Length: 99
Image (tube, rainbow, N blue to C red; front, side, top):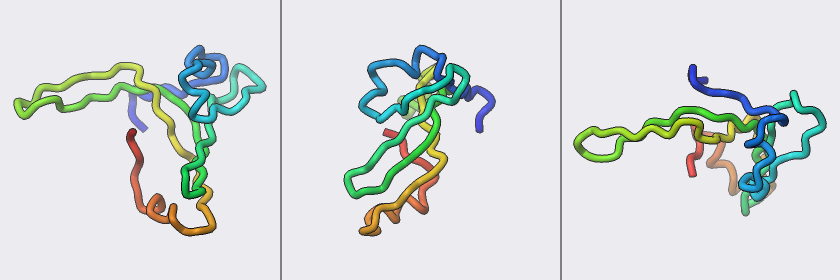
């Protein structure tokens, strides 16, 4: 985990944002709980995890200029449930998905 990562809790406004409802943000019972999600891929694999924010730095051009996105919302998957058709097996060997 990076030094700039911040775990979101249910009390954080980002956890209640309309922007994350389509990602399957779970219901919160207490403000101090982690802000979590459940996301099902088309082939049946389900990802469970926590939302957080982090600073993301991207190279923008061949001249090695960089752009920084401060406070970018990130989902950190903590558990995967693979579909019965094994189409999600490719996820077993990935370090992460950005998109």
